[in-house]
Image (cartoon, rainbow, N blue to C red; front, side, top):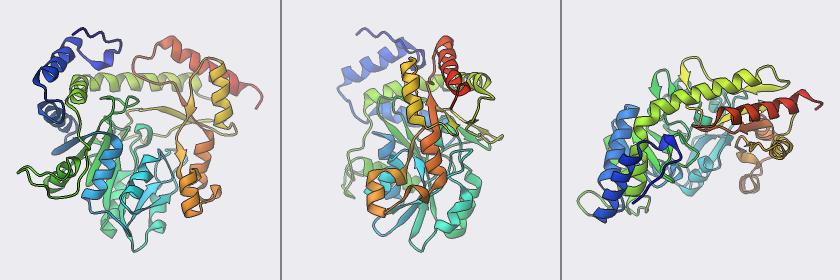
Amino acid sequence: MSIRLSKPWLGDPSQLKRRLDEVLESGFLVQGRLVAEFEAGAAEWLGVRQAVAVSSGTAALHLSLLACGIGPGDEVLVPAFTFPATANVVELAGARPVLVDVDPESFNLDPDRLEAALTPRTRAIMPVHLFGNPAEMEAILALAGKHGLAVIEDAAGAFGSRGRDRACGSFGAAGCFSFHPRKLITTGEGGLVVTGDPALADRLRRLRNHGLDAAGAFQAAGFNYRMTELAAALGLNQLPEVDRMLAERQELAAAYRSRLAGLPGLAFQRVAGDSLSAWQAFVVRIDGRENRPLVAELKRAGVEANIGTYAIHRLDYYARKYGYRPEDYPNADRLYRFCLALPFYNGIPAPDLEVSARALADRLAGPV
């Protein structure tokens, strides 16, 4: 087998080749020894007791809700500005996602708005560490404890992020990660649930594999949400690179901030002083400039920018089902219209970053 890696963050090519050869020679392609090794390595890196690998970040969120007993008639508080999967998994569990507006500076769930969203049916809170920026977990956990609510962290883009010197994903009952290609670690597709509760971990393991328990009995109606051995091999090869990749992302974010500081209407995502963002994406808010026309302008200049993410109440499905209006969640609506994600990834050449920053600066410095 010949492997040529063009991405240095994929780790040692010879080690990856050895692992892939081992998988192919064994004939055991799904949820075997390498998956278990990846779970153990990720748990150790994150400082958690239990880690359960699954097929995607969405699967991680879905299983966590079910393992926490969330189902029909329940409500889960979710941020109004996030990727649709956060709300979709609540719907898939048969519950209702109750939207809560976000802070326009951190882009994360605003804890001060949670109390007003509570009803007798509220069972859980699902904060998102958006773009890798740690959410205000202390305030969220305090409210959850007061009302007896489960906290399930959507840490899809926050592997490596830390708040108050704790890994994002380690605060709540469960923390959910994605290993999609846009994330710090990628297994192609893949996800992980971490928890400090062994009983919850056991339920997650059963549910990911058709309800099958360790003794070979089918104890529940489960899913096929297993991780493959090939995916685990990719993940294992990258775990030793995480510290280096995180350090590089801090440098890349600082470079963008230095080059874009002071531009008219531009605001950076606020990261708390006691937090470390993994910078899954570098997203800015540009007041007064709609992002979609700006994305098109930058594309013509050879820069592949994008919107930040989505206002859930603006999506057709949720607007139709729940009758949302754009003004219902003004901060989420504002960020949906004015946030811009710039090209950002480990290994981005310095000249490319410079071109992206200059192209945006040129457009903001001119007439609006």
